[in-house]
Image (cartoon, rainbow, N blue to C red):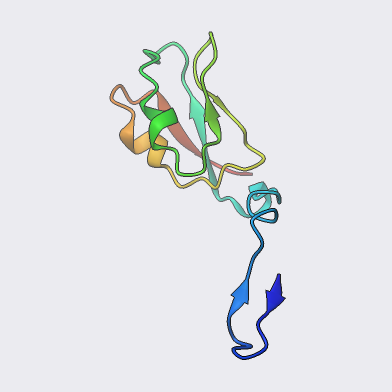
Length: 88
């Protein structure tokens, strides 16, 4: 991050820094996939704002290192195959 000289209160972030730091340490809840209920419609993949859900043969796979726990995937799942579980 760097400060601009003329407007020191505005901080710019270079694009190489975005998405490079894990966020799991501040997540409160995490999505857990119930594979027996999943119909592999991939709605969760399409709606994930961070792009951390990927398609696999078994079903969606979540990269928990970068998942922020926003619950959008769980809210959009048409068969409720994603449960938000509180982090310990």
